[in-house]
Length: 317
Ligand SMILES: NC(=O)c1ccc[n+]([C@@H]2O[C@H](COP(=O)([O-])OP(=O)(O)OC[C@H]3O[C@@H](n4cnc5c(N)ncnc54)[C@H](O)[C@@H]3O)[C@@H](O)[C@H]2O)c1
Image (cartoon, rainbow, N blue to C red; front, side, top):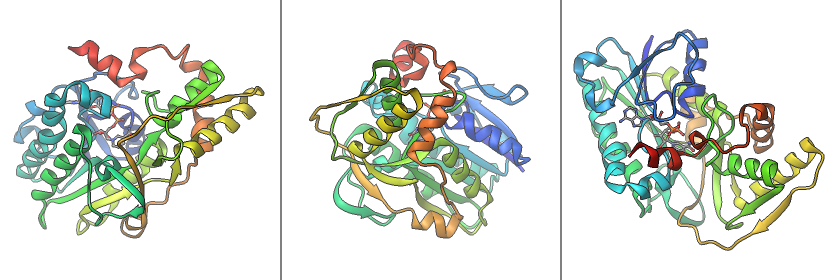
C-alpha cells in the first residue's frame, strides 16, 4: 500500500515513517523541513508546502496521514493567523484534494487539547469540547473540516493524541516529560508549574503504533479516537521523572513548585481506540525517561533551537 505522510519529517513522523517502512508500506513524505530531515536514508522526502499539492499529486496513494501544521500552543500564540491557516484550513484542503484523487482514507493528527479545561471528569469522544485558545480551536477546526468530507468511499479518522513525549530522530524538548527530563539532567531540578493539572501522556513509539492501527483498520471505520497511555497530574509526572533520573544518574534531583495558572486541564478515556482500532499502548512515563536517557549523547547541551519548536519557528520569519 502506498501512503503519503504529510508533515512526516517532524517529531512524530520521524518515528512513524520508519515503522511504516518496516511494515512494508511504500511511504512518501511531503514536508517543509522546518526542523530538517532526520528520516532514514532512501526515504522519498519532497520539500514542499502541502498547499501546493493538487489532485494529480495525490493520485495512487491509498491513504494520507496528516502530521503537519503548527504543533503547539506557543507557535499558535506567536502567529495566530498562520495557525488558523495551517491547522484550521490545511487539513480540509488536503483531505479535499485526497478525496478527489480517490484516496481511501485520511488520518488526521488531532489533539486532546481540543477538550480545553475540564474538572474531575473523564472525557470520551462524545464529551463537549471547550477549548478557547488558538491552538485548540484550530485543531478542532482541522478535525471538523476533515470529517465533513467523510463518506462510504472516504474513511476519515482523527487521532486525538495526548501529549506525545519520548525520543525521536527529530527530538523535541518542549513536551512535558522531555522538558522535565532535560532540566533534571542539565540543572538537577524539575520545575512544576501547576502540580494539580491533568495531562494524558503517550510515548511517541505508541503514537506511531496508533497511526499504524488506524491505517490497518477496516475501511468501514471512521471517527475520532482518544489515544494516550494514561492520565497523570503534572505533579505525578514530575515525581516519576525525578525518581527515574535519580536512579539513572545516581544523584539527587530537586523539584521547584510554581503556581502558574494553566488553560488546559483534561483526562480522557481511550476505550474507543482499544475497541475499534485494537490500540494498546505499552510505554509508561518511566519508559519514556529511559528511552531519552539511552540517547543522551545525541542531545549535547540541549541548547539546539531545533529541540524547541517556538525558537525555530521564530527564526523562519
Ligand atoms: N507532539 C505532540 O505532543 C502532539 C500532540 C497532539 C497532536 N499533535 C499533532 O501531531 C502533528 C505532528 O506533531 P509533531 O510533534 O510531529 O510536530 P512537528 O512540529 O515536529 O512536525 C510538524 C511537521 O510539519 C511540517 N509542516 C508544517 N506545515 C507544513 C506545510 N504547510 N507543508 C508541509 N509541511 C509542513 C513541519 O516542517 C514539520 O516537519 C501536528 O499536527 C500536531 O498538532 C502533536
